Length: 153
Image 1: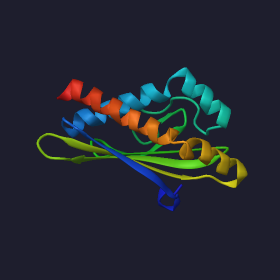
Image 2 (image 1 turned 135 degrees about the horizontal axis):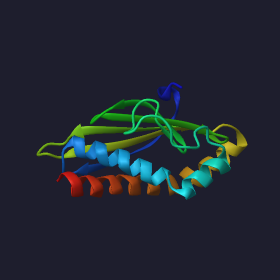
Image 3 (image 1 turned 90 degrees about the vertical axis):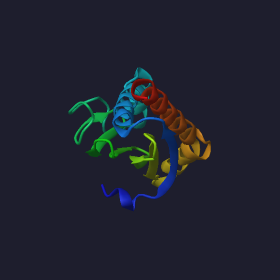
Image 4 (image 1 turned 45 degrees about the vertical axis):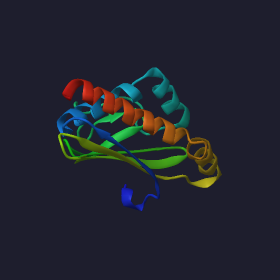
C-alpha cells in the first residue's frame, strides 16, 4: 500500500517533556495496550480488519501487528508507520517524533484513509464526521505523553 496515495484526514500533535527514546517506548506500550484490549479485538472482528491479533516482533518493528494495524516501517525514536484495512476503509497512521528543544519531543500523528462505496461513506461519517477519531487520537497522544514523562522525564 502506498500511503501517500491515501487522502489525508488529519494530524494531531503534542509536545512531550522528555527525550525521544522515552516517547518511542511509551508510544509502543500505549499502542499495544490500547489496541490489545478485548473491546478492540471485538471491534476488529466486527468491521473485518485484516490483522486481528498481535503477532510479529516486539517491541514494535516492521512486520509487527496488533488488532487493526500492521507496522510497515519503524525507525526507533523517529517514525512509526501503521497500516490497516477492513470492509469500510483502507488507512494509515503515521507517528513522527521530532526534537522540540530543551529535552522535549514533538509527537505527531497523521491519519490517511480511503472510504470506498456507500458503506465507506457511512463509516467515515460515523468515525470522522462525529469527531470520534479526533477524540480517540487526542486521548492516545495524551496517554503517550503522560507515560513518557512519568518514565523518562
